[in-house]
Image (tube, rainbow, N blue to C red):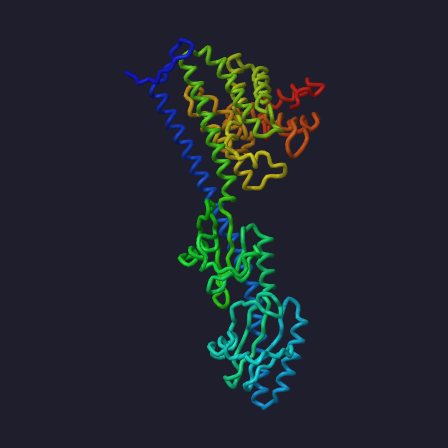
Length: 515
C-alpha cells in the first residue's frame, strides 16, 4: 500500500504519492546542496581576495616605512663617520657644535623629513644642532637615546616614539655610539611622514584600518588618527586589545577574529625594529552581498520547486485542469524571471508567442504548439540563480561574468528535468543557446543534433533580444534585426526556422512585434 500525504480543499481530496513526495524532497536537497557548494566557493574566493588585498596594503606600507627608517639609519651612519674622524683628529668642542649646526640646517631642507636636527654627547658635553641649552639637571647619559645606543654595540639604534616638546608631535630617535665608545650622536625624526604613509594606504585600498605597532604593541601610526599613542596591550575589551590578543597567538601572517559581531581579517608584516604593519579588513561587510544573494537564491529555488511540485500534483489529479492551471503558473514564473531585469520584462512571454507562431507555420499540431509555447515561457528559468548584479550590469560583461551567465541553460534544464510529468520542458531551457554551426553553448551541438524545439526558440529568443530595449542599448531598428536574422541563417539559426521568422518580420510592416 502506498503512503500518501492527504489534504482537502473545497471538499476534494488531494493525494500526494509517497514516491513523488520523496523524489521532490531529494530534488530540493540536491539543488540546495549545489547552491550551498557554489556559494561556499564564492565565500572562499572572497576571503582569499580580502587576504590578498591585505597583503598588498601591508607590504606597501611596510616597504615605504622601512625606506623612511632606512633613510634615518643611513643619515646617522654618515654623520657618525664624520664625527669619528673629528674625534680621532682632536677637533674642539666648538668645531663639533658648528658641524652639528651645519648638518641640522642641511637636513631641514630635505623633503619628507621633519626633524629638530642633530645632537650629541661628546667628550662629556651635550652639544645641540639648534644650539639648545639644556637645564642644569639635564643628564644625557640617562636619556633613552643614549642608553639605546650604548646597548646596541656600535649599530644604529631606533628608539620608540615619544612626544617631542619642541615639535609637539610624536618623534623617533636614531642614535649611535662614536669611536671612543663614550660619545653618542643622535637625530630626531617626526613620525608624521609615517602617519601619512598609513593614511594614504588606507585611502587607496579597501581595508577598514591600516596601522603600525611598536614591539610593545603601542600604536605608532593609524589611519584613524585618534588611535595614535594607544597602548593596545594594556587595554581590555577594546578592538585594539582583541586585535593584539589574536596577533600574539597567530602563527601565520594573516588571521581573523570577531569583535562585537563583526569578523575582521588581518594581514601583518614585521619591519625594522620589530615594528608591525597591519592591514585590517571588514570581512562581514564583504560577505554581506553574498549572504543576501544566497538567501534570495534559496528562496527563489524553493519557490520554483514548490510551484513545479504543485503542478505535478494537480496533473496527477486531473490532467485537464492541470493544463489550464500550469499555464498560468508557468506564465507567472516566467514573469518572475523576467522581473529580475526590468529591461527584459515580458521577454519570456514574447519568445513563447514567437515560438508558437513559428511552430504553427511549420505545421505543428495544436497540442505541440502549446507545448513549445510553454517551453518558450520556461527557456530562461535557469536565470533564477544568476546574481542580479550580473543580469542587470549596464556595460559589457567580464569573461568571469559571462561564464556565470552561461550556466543558466544547464541550471534550467536540471530544474525542469526533475519533473517527469513534463519531460520535454527541459529541451528549450537546455539548448536554446546552441548554434546551427556548432559554436553555441553549453554542449556545442550543431545542425539537427539540436532538438527541433530548441532551434525554434533560438530564433525567437534572438529576435526578441534585438527588438527589445536592454540595459546597455535601445532596441534595434526592424531592418537591422531582419538583416541579423538573414545573416545568421545556416550559421546561428536553422535555415528553415530563420526563413519563417523572416516571413513574420516582413508581414509586420509597422514593427508592432517589438518588445
